Length: 242
Image (tube, rainbow, N blue to C red; front, top):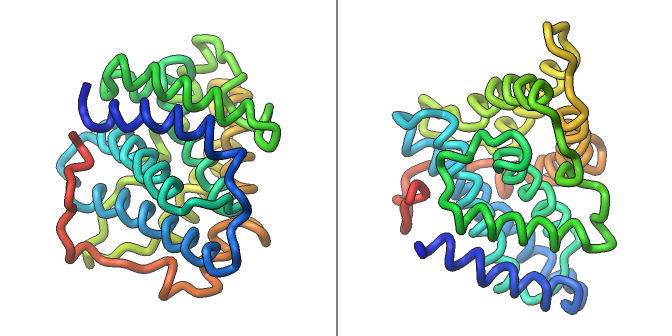
């Protein structure tokens, strides 16, 4: 069992005992929650910047797994329940789930069997939480034709997610906005296949959670220097592709 696999096992246990029992964060700890989200988001984007020679699908899948790992580490350290952080982590799980074998399968080749199993268990626990029950994509069972169409959409937009920057800069807000726009455009444009429900549902989740007047990106853009920008000058302490 590698480090990520072992961590996901711990995360499943941690989630079931601490997510519901944690007390709400104070105003001070809410600031810490915002910093934790920024830290993880920067980690995944820096991963993408440093590995531009890797196939986009693999880079997307490995990066999302690393993001999930970071999210649970930060939540454990946070020690309280932040509505904004929990909402963000729910969305992270939707990104991870879309790539798993039960749904689109894009990440099947890049995840070990025990990783897939533990992610399934983790997703089940999150979406069984009353706050998120029935709101995710994991209760959708797309047919093969739907999967092919959904994969076409997801592959188009994930290339935007993992793209590098010639200036070596990271603008998290701009990157997410471009991904949201890509998905909205792909859902709406004429195509030979019928856009499947799982793609529409995923698009709805990410648009509501990240965009709009109450979305996370709107919150970040109120203080862009603090929450949107970073660079790749500091090396990673761990390889996101392991």
